[in-house]
Image (cartoon, rainbow, N blue to C red; front, side, top):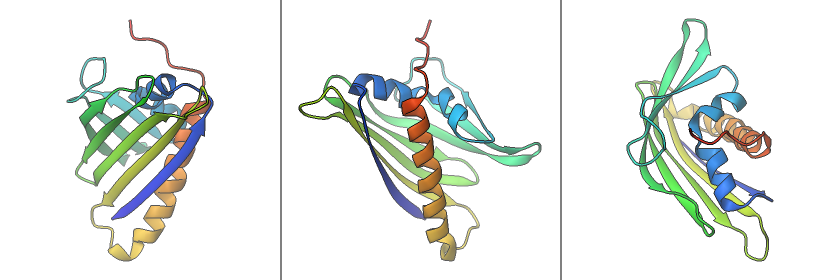
Length: 152
């Protein structure tokens, strides 16, 4: 099990940071070799299910996730929790966005517990470091890339 935490600050307001981090399809733009399929209609909320398919050609795996807590960011902030329910990757992730007092910007805290089936515990440190690096880059990419289009 790899438990890790990522913290970032942004000059963007909390509501915009929230929108960038929770438009699930956009994660495929910043995570290499990954496609995202949202199985439930927009907008996101409790019960939203999406799948991150990672791999190359026929070699890959599905990371199935369900939003189990949804508190969209307003002026002050918001939080959501995802449960990972795949056959290969399990665990949870929490994304918390809050306004930074005295600025127009916001702060992000991403906490995650990641388990990869059949991976011995001896590899937890390597998994933690790799996941923290990969998800940190994903958060950075989502915060700096062009904003998502509004839902029609």
